[in-house]
Length: 507
Image 1: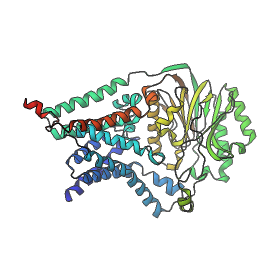
Image 2: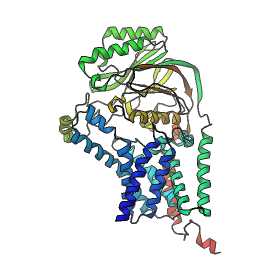
Image 3: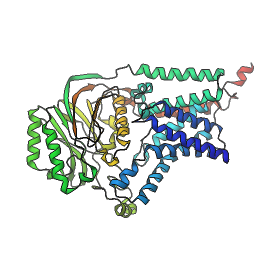
Image 4: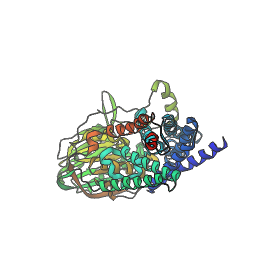
């Protein structure tokens, strides 16, 4: 028991250290090293429940350190009392830690040789449970391992297999490192080291491949960052000031495409003053382009978090489809509604989903695929707009998380969407990170956070598709499943610790 406690402490610290691999720090080797520590500890764990406990400790360290900004949203802006916000944040982190815990337990239950377990079984179960975490209960794929590698050599695998494919490459790298550590400088250790170098070299080589092609000429963009404090955003006394801020910033733009962030105008579309609408509409037409505005919308079904357009094109709308649980709707309202409404005070807490299949917006001579808030963390949903869309666009309001790491982490996630699709990503945010991201996933331009400003630049439309757009997550899930099946096919053959066929070596 004392050994398990010691190993659990090591796993917790390894998980917490992984956070430095994500934005804003960006030390991408750290999550690989941290996961290698976990795999090495799991290798020594017996019985399977001990491996599961180590996975839980690792996940608890990762999520407590990595998503502590949940507390800011709950306490500072959701008005949840301190004595409830802290336990709620810890409980949510503990819930997320159940997924690496289950991965640890499952990998220990799968028969495999010592040589195959760290390089096949452990990485495959890790990634499959990452995918489950990003899918179940509407999904929360934050801190998926692959996001730490948006600027690493492993980013080359993103256009092929998406973020989970990058996760798999990183997890296999961790397994190979664990194998090297366990085998030291023996022949099998050197083989693992060569495989590790080949994996990273292959990723770097793939980064040079251009999967999509430019379409038309570059066009000018202006991304507005109003920096309206979250405390004032839905304050009726501050409404006139909010509208004036975005009116002033929009009228300064001479870009063909001007974008305001999520709910920049915290009103229903039909409640926005008509003189303001006319002013913005005429200004966009003078620029020969369009303005995209975040607001709320309503029909007979209810309220929507939406975007509408003004300018040379006919007015179009996009309504957010993937809503935030407990932020935009309350799951199991008959059971939980009384508690949530009694504790939280989040405006528009019950929204309606927009349609699953909504066409891109035909604006500024481009087919623009918008998503709102954290919709861009779901890569397989973003690719629904392709190949029709030529540009990706995210409108968000990360002011909910104050001056934490959340906005930088969110921007890094958007970088992965650009890599996966071979499309530029434009981000208009209330307080940051407002940015222009290239098809290679690198940030071309970016505004400082928590400042009122306009990001002026140029974007390029693209055509064509990447393999990930064609396959979605199915390819990497099939690959991970195959990595689990292969050890089962070998279990009937006596193996040595290297996984070599002992019968064959005896002959």
